Image (cartoon, rainbow, N blue to C red; front, side, top):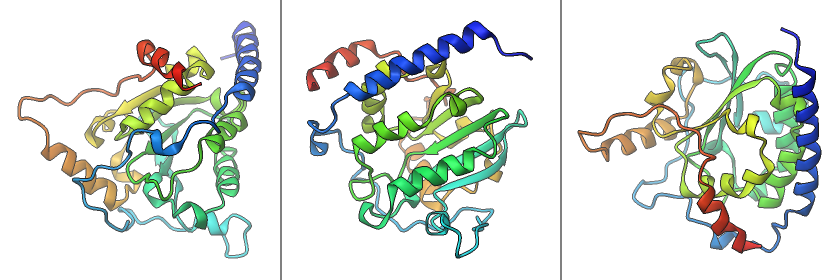
Length: 248
């Protein structure tokens, strides 16, 4: 199907507005320690071991991205139930910030996506395991969003944020003015892995054991009467966005 020229023009205009907004977004004045805690103190920390099937590093040891790929942070995880390629990003596999080159991580993510962005694809972000030790800076997140231009956003059909915390919800609200309406409709919160089964093949994802255990922990906290929900879009909390304006 041919692309709609008016839609493409609107996307380009939105991109210009976004780049201008990103340049004006002042994150240096926000102290990270004032953000909502991103770790559940009741859930014990554990070292990650890869899920099944086991991921294999496909790059040679002398490849410039080998030191990033060996952590298995970004993986190609088969196809979803619509035949679209799935890219998996596991926050729990990120080492402490002082041990990881975040600029190179961004380059590797783009390198991976570049192989699939010409076709429809799905991105699954496993948020559990992002801690104060491995969390990238907000300025890096701003710069990363700038790097992902229309080339990457056009054919992404869904971005599933699994196990969202108050931190990630607050962050998305903060970035809401920069996210186009069209792209915002592609972002979904997923509270439990079982909610993904309708859309992706869980057995192909190679989910880290740490994430599997955390999902079991969350399910154990559910009341018997609670019914699993479908993934929900996160970007409709306008009243919270107004409150966050006080940060600037």
